[in-house]
Amino acid sequence: MAALTGPARRLLPGGLAGLGLPPRRFRYKKKWAATAPKISAIRMALQNFDMNYSLQFGSLWPSIRVSLLSEQKYGALINNFSHADRVSQELELLNAVDFVYESQKTVQRMQEDLPVEQVRAEEAAPQESHTEQLSVEETQTPALLSPSISPNIKCYTFSRGDVSRFPPARPDAFGTLDYYLLDAASLLPVLALNVQPGDLVLDLCAAPGGKTLALLQTGCCRQLAANDISASRSSRLRRVLSSYLPKSLSAGVRITSWDGRNWGDLEGDTYNRVLVDVPCTTDRHSVMEEDNNIFSRLRSKERQMLPMLQMQLLLAGLLAARPGGEVMYSTCSLSQLQNEYVVERAVEIAEIEHNIRVRVEDLSYVRRLFQDTFSFFADCRLGELVLPHLTANFGPMYFCKLRRER
Image (tube, rainbow, N blue to C red; front, side, top):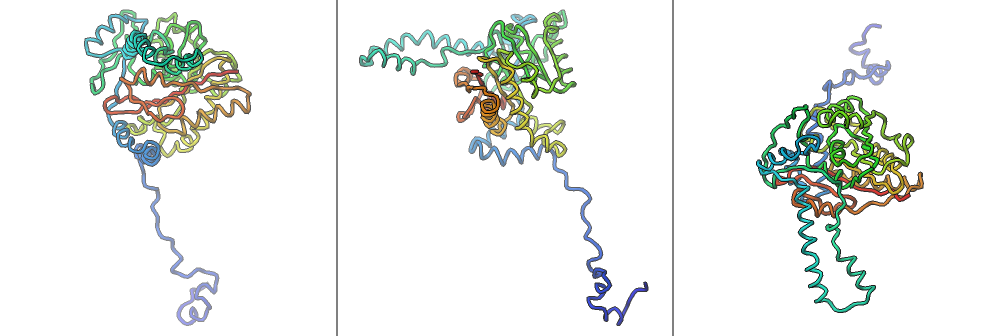
C-alpha cells in the first residue's frame, strides 16, 4: 500500500491510527541500557547489614561495622598430637596466652576465695530457716564456679589490643603440623558442647575442619562422624585432618558427604553430642571478599533460603541426638533471623511434629569465663553472641546449646 501523504492523510480520523497503525511519535521505543548497573557483592552485603544491623544493635553497629572491615584476629589451636609442650613454650615467648587455661585459673582463684566470702556473709546475715538457707545458697552460688566445657583444648591468643600475627605452623619430623590458625571465637561452641569421655559425636556440617579438629583434641570421642554435603569441602576436611592427626586416628574419623537434613532418618537417637555449625551469610567474609560471596546476584535465592536450611539442619541434629544428648547450634553471622529465630522455630517443630522436648541451656557462664578475651553481646535472648571489636577482633560467632529431654 502506498504511503498516504498530505490531504489524504488528514482525511483519516486519527491520522495513521485510522488504518490501525500507531501515531509516528510512538513508533520507536526509548533506548534502554542493555544491562542493569553492576553492584559488587561486598557493597550489597554492606547495604544489607547497614539496614538490618543498625536496627538490631543500635549504637553498637558503627563499632561492629568498623571491626568487620578491619583485620581479623586469630588464635592458634595447639595440636595435642604433635609436640604440644614445646610449641606452647614457643608461643608464650611471643607473649601469647592460652585463653582457655587462663579462664580456668580465674575459676580456681574464685573457688579458693569463695569459702572466705561465704563465712563473712553468713556472719553478717540474720538467722534463717533451713528452707530459706537452701534457697539463698542456690541463688548465690555462681554458675561460673562449675563450668562445663570440653577438656584438653589449648588455644593461644594475643591480648586485647595486640594485633600481632602468629607465624605459619611448622610440621614435625612426621609431617604433623603443630597448631591450627582459626578465629578463636569458633572454639567456643566446641568448648561449650562439653564433650565427655566415651561420647559418640556428630559434626553435621564439618568442613573446612577447624571445629572437627578441636573436637578430636579433647581425646573424648569414642566415635566421630564428620559430614559435609559438599564433596570438595569434604576433601578439604580430609586434607586438614591428615595434616594434623596420626594416620591411625584420622582413619578412625568417619567422613561423609550426605545431605545433613536427612540425618535424623539415617541415624536417629544415636549421638551424645551433636555440633550443627550451619552455612550462613559468613558476615566477615561477605564484607571483605568478592570470591564465593553469598551476596552475589547469582546467589540471591540461596541467601533467602538460608534460615529454612539452617532450621532443617538443626532439626536433623536434634533428631540424631539421643534423649539426654546435647546439640550445639552455631553460625558466624550477627543476624537474628539466622540465630535466635532459627533456634525457636526448630524447637517448636521438634515438639509439634516429632514429639521431642528440647530445653535451651543457659550459656551465660561461658560469657563470664571468657569475657577477658572476647566481646559478648549482652542482650542475646537465646545463646551467646561474640561481637567483633577493634581491641578483640574475633567473631562474629553465635552459639546456642540445646538439650534433648525426650
